Length: 352
Figure 1 (cartoon, helix red, strand yellow):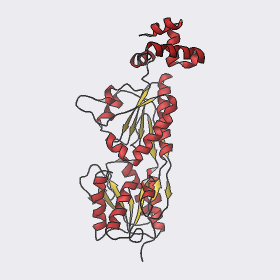
Figure 2 (tube, rainbow, N blue to C red):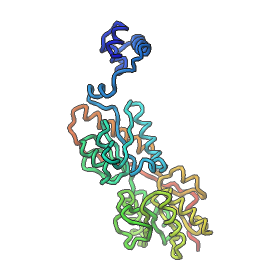
Figure 3 (cartoon, one colour):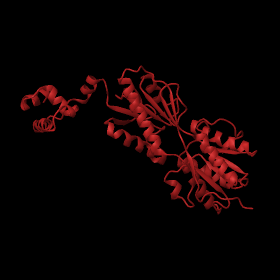
Figure 4 (tube, rainbow, N blue to C red):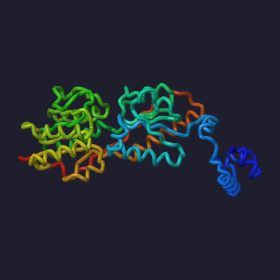
């Protein structure tokens, strides 16, 4: 069954049948309905997608690399909320969204072989195998929550501002013994950093730490930094327990994420400590966890929807620019999404 079969049955040209499937605005509603009805009766499902993509020079899809693991990405409330916003914004464009694993499996690589018009890379390390392949393919690329690239669009939160807001809030409450609970993928286990000013091997974590340090330095206060390897429950929980069990534990702690903050609150309460009377806790993200824990979290809020929509719009702009003849790679563009502090019950003045 082919286009010509349907065209002969309806008494129109092959182009008219093709337009009925791919360019409906070129036909009257009545004619398009007649073509599609005849195609359905004959068992014709439409032009081959691969051939249609070749003919128009477009795959009609974008690739998305979500963190280091697709499975972990959908367990992470932040990554899931961000991806939902991207998908919603792209839906009216007709672009399909294809998820790409961060690393290849054997000889297969979706990042190398998948037909896509542009790629979005979310929070992945720069040495991830998929990132290397996508960069080699010379596609429009949008990077999110990563160190800015020399070409293409980068979308980032104002991470340092978030760190400053969290630290200043605790200082204003009267806290002088403040620590940061964060992540550093280059380290194993969990421990206090020997040098709290040492760079972390994660762009987002390091930027948030720099913001906290700026405010602590301005107030003339020292800072301790406790790190775990990654922002996953099974890694965070032992670290949170170690902080709470430390006889010299801090009176207030700023966490890399709401996930870490919730783990700290759970560990503190299990140890018989009161939050915020014995330990004030600040999270980051304002995910659903922030209001699910008790007491609810004071946290740095990021707008998942604004960030996701900005990423989707940047993808569409990149595709449109290439179609209009703009040479690749596209010029660098760095978009900063603002953050704000939401004060709830997990922070308070220190005990006398």
